[in-house]
Each structure stands twice: as structure tokens, then as C-alpha cells.
Amino acid sequence: MTAGFEVAAVVEDALWAAARERLPAELLGGPALTAAVIDRSRRYTSERERLAAAGGERATAADLAARALFFTVADAAKLHLPLRELAGAGDAAPVLPAPAGFLTGDVLRVLDVGAGCGAMTLGLCTFLAARPAAPRLAVTLLDRDREALALAERAVTAVARALGLAVAVEVRAVDVTAPLPRGGFDLVVAGSVLNELTAPAPVAAAMIEVLAPAGVLIVVEPALRVTTRALHTARDALIAGGHAAVLAPCTRRAAPCPALAAATDWCHDHRPLRLPPRARQLAQITGLRDGDMKLAYLALCRPAAAPAAPAALRVVDDPHATKGKLELTLCGAAGWIPARLLKRHRSATNRGLERAHRGDVLVVEPAPTAEAPELSAEARVSHHPLPG
Image (cartoon, helix red, strand yellow):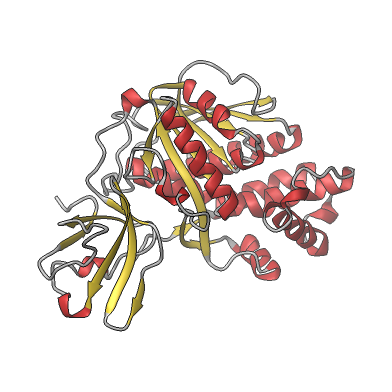
């Protein structure tokens, strides 16, 4: 079963405490907060033409309440998925290793671009707190919204204190398209930023330019078709321009992205997610979450720092069983590959295919091809990395 994720209650508590300090009490619950959550969801999904719509002072404050008390809470765990793959979790080895030294230094320099209310940095804090030895963090939160930054700074400081992390926070109220701070960041994160830009690739390239030699950029975007395909396009532009190498989710390092071949395709992930109490109640009232964490993401590094590409395949759709067979689509060096396991070919060595879910990384020997998608009874399927 694919790994589930949980938003730590300490994140929700810190955001509510920060919101109480800076937002009107009437926006912190009830119909006003519910309406603001629904409105923001519509502007980012079915009514994207209203994405940049200006509002009055109260509308702006209501939107900030929705961002802080629901969307930031719900999004904080999204960073855990790429971090688990790049750095491992607990005793587990990385699935798709990052450059040597990632997250292992005494001090981790972090730039959160378009930080908003701090979802990505809050997710980083809770991820690091679960590791055996967390580094000290020097975090720069960058966003044009001063009020959101103020909430983020208070929430990150409170979460760090609660989790016993050493975190120094600096805020910069500037637009994400402005020149970025220099100095070699070990990690740059950008949550739900690129989808708001008309030219995302140059901004992403600028983020890579401020990485340390072995640093990593993680971009997290909504799992909508339009936003995810824009992320695929930016990926290809960064690779073609020599700006970046892709670490995850792709096991295929080359461009073009196979998901762009057909206009109806896009590559995204979803994993089980458990929200803390107040966000879970909002999700139930608004109907905006169905127990899954949906996202599209990219982890990138400088080309010279990229480890060797793994001989593995990513499951890019939800496996579906029909009479007498199981079918799914895999992505690897050769692009998208259909895979099929007939019931009569099931065996102890290939049963791993039946346990696969969207987003899993598999080692299949021999690998299926477009011309020969069927797995034999002798095929070996294991979840990457191989045990031992």
C-alpha cells in the first residue's frame, strides 16, 4: 500500500494562534471562513480567470484566513513526499537519491519562494523533526504578501519551538519574479507558485541558480491538468536549456516529458492524507478533500550534481483490473510503457505488480516494452530500492 501522510496537529495549532493575532475574530470560523475556503478553491480550479481578482479589505482578510487555516494546513504534508523519496524516512533508504550530502549538514539554508503562510517550510520542519538528527535551519521566506509572511513567520517559529528545532527565520516582502537572494541554498521550495506565472521556467531557472552545488529545488503544484502540464513544460525547458537535472518524480531524465504527447494526459500523484481536527471539519463542510493528498511536483538539481538515473519505473496511473488481467502504465527511460499481467501468469516473483499504486517506483526485470507489454510468470517485480 502506498504510504499515507498526516499533517501534524502542531502545524494547525500554530497557524490558528498566528491568525488570532492578526485577523478579525469573525473570519476565524463559521460561514465566513467556509465561504472564503470555497471561493479560493474555485478561483484555483474551475474559475481560474478570477485567480488574480482584487478584493476589498475584508475580502482580502477572508482569503488570508482561508489560506492560513485550511489550505496551508492541508498543503504542509505535500513536501514530505519528495523529501521521503530524496532523503529517505526513518530507517528507509531514499527511493530516488538526491545529490550526496542532501539534508545532512549541520546547518540547512532554505529559501521558500512564494512562501505565503508557510506551508512548505512548516512541512519541512515536521519532516526534519522526525529524523534522527535534525540540522539547524536558516530559512528565508519570500513573498509579496506582507500579511501572509507575518503569519508564516509566527507559525514557523512556534512549530520549531514545539518540535525542538533550531530555526532562524528571515522574511522578505518581494515578488517572486524579483532577483532572488544569493548565497547558495541547500534547499529551495516553491509551493503553488509557478502556476500563477505566465513564464514559469525562467523563475524556476533563477531558483536553481541560487542553489548550493549539491542543493535541491522542490516545486509543488496543484494536481490539475492545466497546472500539471504547465509544470511538465517547464521541466522540459529547464532540461533543454541545461539549467537542471530532474531527480523526482521522473526516473526518465530526458525531455520531452511523455505526459505531454497527448493533450488529455498529465502526471500527478495522490496519497492518503489525514488532516488535523479543524481542517478535517472544514474539509467535510466544504467537500474539498476526499481523504487524498493530490499534487504534482518536481525535484531538480544542478546538472553536474545529479546522481546516476535509477533503472526503475514510475507507476503513472491507477492500476485497473479487467477480466483476467491487470493493466497499468509505467514511465522510465523509454517513456510511457503499458504493462499487463495476465491472471494465468501470476507468480510469486511478479506479484509486486498487483500491489502497485499510482506513484510507486518499481524495478521490473525484464522491463516491459511498448511492443511486449505482458509480464511473464518468470518476471521479477519489486518496489525500489531493492531490499538490502
